[in-house]
Amino acid sequence: GAGVSQTPSNKVTEKGKYVELRCDPISGHTALYWYRQSLGQGPEFLIYFQGTGAADDSGLPNDRFFAVRPEGSVSTLKIQRTERGDSAVYLCASSLVPSGLTDTQYFGPGTRLTVL
Amino acid sequence: AQKVTQAQTEISVVEKEDVTLDCVYETRDTTYYLFWYKQPPSGELVFLIRRNSFDEQNEISGRYSWNFQKSTSSFNFTITASQVVDSAVYFCALKMWGNNDMRFGAGTRLTVKP
Image (cartoon, rainbow over all chains, first blue to last red; front, side, top):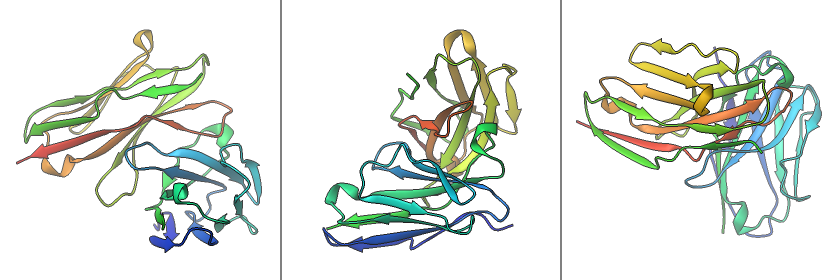
């Protein structure tokens, strides 16, 4: 079946601009995660959704970052007033059951964000 | 603190060699899960294995095998008879029961030369 999809695959923007990154999880997966991967590093947790609500946003670096999942499926990560330091690959993952039950997370291909 | 260390930044082998990727983790929790993911040049993280803290049995899947040792807090990954297609960055990750985030190591870049 279809895996996690993310759009766009690449996004180039200018410092100070607003961007939206989209994630479409595996059908039926209730849990959705966003991670950020900087060059040469492992992914770092940003936010976790269980259904429509952000159950854990402890990884968001500051209030310029926000994410929504209004219908419990597709999620959008929003970054305001982008900075060069936001340049990274943003990964989305989904799992079948809630995080507390520690189901396996399946990752999408990522969106490479470049802030000029 | 929860932490994953992959001390090998890069490994290069010749095809058909065996190679072991090391993973050492730190946690004070008694219930946790360990994972290995493969990230090929395409960028997508591919799930390889999940192991919970109460199951120390080693696992073999084809050319892949995993050695989990709680006594040394290690979860090492061995590829037997490596192939060029095994070239990728491999990540070890730790997730505590009840936590939402997975902690990843910095990854090991494996290059298999023909």
